[in-house]
Each structure stands twice: as structure tokens, then as C-alpha cells.
Image (cartoon, rainbow, N blue to C red):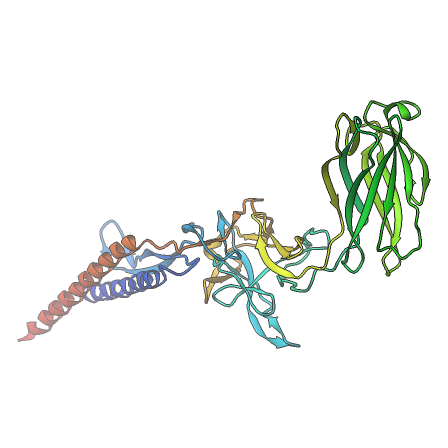
Length: 432
């Protein structure tokens, strides 16, 4: 009977609008939740019988319509480890399940999220506000990511070991117009323990376009007292080279000069012992026959253009920073930095088919497709915006409109139930 069918249809409408109201409530409640994706409602009708002559009442169901691909607003954050994704993709994260030897153990499943409010915990892991641990590629000593596996990224807060100086680059001009007064200069080098030592250099003119370089290392314990080498510029070299450029090295004691080949580096090598064994150092003076590094041009004074060396003192952990390419970098107070990993972006064929989990996280499903792990801004994945967070994609004004429609539709369905009840009562009263 159509009266019963009408009542059942109206009741299905009440259930559908209740679900729609639940979606609206969930969206409004999470309108300020970082990385939250709203759930819209898709109403689906079901037909019991429909022909050219008869259409019996059917029913309606409310199905969730997920918006995982809809971008939320990206806003700046004071947190240097906060990150947002501009475009498609998600962060891979892990859920802790316990502890072993003082470190967390993780669920074998990989979760995915857009909530990038990560901070470093006491163990050095990057954890977001929902308790998920950021996963990524580890890096080798050169900073190159190992893309064979992803794992929770952990920041090494140990010291940066000192590096002994092996190369010194010197760029300066010797005064061609003042050749009677020796020129003094100094370079600084580090030993294997990170201690700083001074090397005193003296440039003495010994003839036209000829200089003698002398080095004195007060802290050297090797017993070497004489370190000299002759440096020939321009016409003093054989064969002659362009004016003002290094052409060759001459007589040496305690110092070793490289072979004079046009265009090759002009290098002076020496060794010193600061109590930890012999340390070999190369002083790079530029290139033969090229106006770079050490030159001899007009002037009254020695002019230093640049000096650098590759030694590093002991460094303590300072900060962690994230680059836009996803590289996670540890910075030390000695001015050095080290890339320890890279944050990839994971994409899916159909992100809206992911399974929801607590804390704005998702799990892969068969319908969502395989998880594709990519570098940021490659293969269709979005780019990482550092020091930023993605807000919820909920629009409060739109949700209030849906709320009104759900409320009115629910009320209208109750009228259908009431009307069907009255008609059934009238039918029962026909016996009187």
C-alpha cells in the first residue's frame, strides 16, 4: 500500500538528513583543525518500482562525499618545522605502538596526513600535534637521499666532529711597485682536535718578478724550522708567462710546489705536527698562467682578496631547518650544517577513497590505488611550503547553508510521516 511506502520513504529521508546533519556538525567542529578535510553529503535515491504507469515510493540514502583533494588555505607559522603541501599529496607518518630500549616502536602500517604541525620531541623525532611521527628518506654522508625505504626521521643531536684543515685557498695581490719591504700575512688552520693554529707567511722580493714565500708555524712540534719556496711571476718564469701571473716554483726547502702546467692549480704543500701526528696541508695560490689567486700587479701594499680553508672546529647542535625541496638539515654552532634526510610527498590515484583514521590521518585502500612516493614538486606531487600550515578546507558560511537545508528537509519528512499516520487512521475509522 502506498501509505506504508510513503511512510517508509519519509523515514529514510529522516535518516538521510540526520546523516547530512552529522556531516555538517563534524565539519563545523573541525573548522579550525589543521589539515582537516570536510565531508560533503551525496544523496542517492533507490527505486522500488517505476514504469510508464506506476511509480511506487522508493527511499533515499546519504553517502559521504570526501574532499581530500580540495586545498585548504596555507598560512604562515612561527614553527620552523611546520610544513604545508601546496598541491596534491600527503606526508607519510607512523603511529607509535610501544617502546623498546628507550625508543618508540611503530605500527607496521603507514599512515598519511596533511597535518604538518611537526615539532621535535625529546628523542629527536618529528611529531605532529596528533602524535604521528614524520617519515622520510634517510641521507648518506653527502646528503643524498636513500629512496629505497621510508622510515621515521630522527634528528641526530650529537656534536659535529672537528675536521683538520687540508686545503687553504689564498687570493691576494703582491705589490709590484714596492719590492724592498717584506710582506707579512697570516692564515689560520685547524688540527684534528679542532684547535686553531696560526701560520705566519712572509713574502720577500728576491728579484724582478721573483718572490720567496717563507712560512713559520709556532705550534709545530715536528722540528722543521725552515719552510721556503721561490715563486716566479711573469718574465721570471721559464718560459715567460702573462705579466702578473704565477709561472713556476723555484728553489724550495720544507715546502713543495706543484709542477708548472699552464692552467693547472699552483699548489704549495707542507706538513705540520700539532701533537696528533703529521698533518698535510695544501696552499692553493690559484692557477699557472692565469690571473687568479696570487698575482703581482701595481700597488704599494699587499692586498688580500679572499682566504678560506676547509677545516672545521668542534660544533654543537643548534637548530633544525627544512628546505623547500624537502631536505631536513641539522645546523651546528660552528657554522656547519648536515642534511640528514628528505621529506617525500605521497600521491594516490584517487585520494578521496582513502580510509579515514583518527587525527586527520588516512590509510591506503584498494580503491585509492598504490601509494607513490615522490620528491616534492615532481610527478604530479605538490611542493612543500616550510614554516607554514594548511588550514581546514571547511567554509563556515557554506556549512550553515547546508545546516538550514538539512533542518528544513528533516522537518518536511516529519510532515510526510504525520500525514501518512493521519490517513492510516482515517482508513481504520472507515468501519465505524
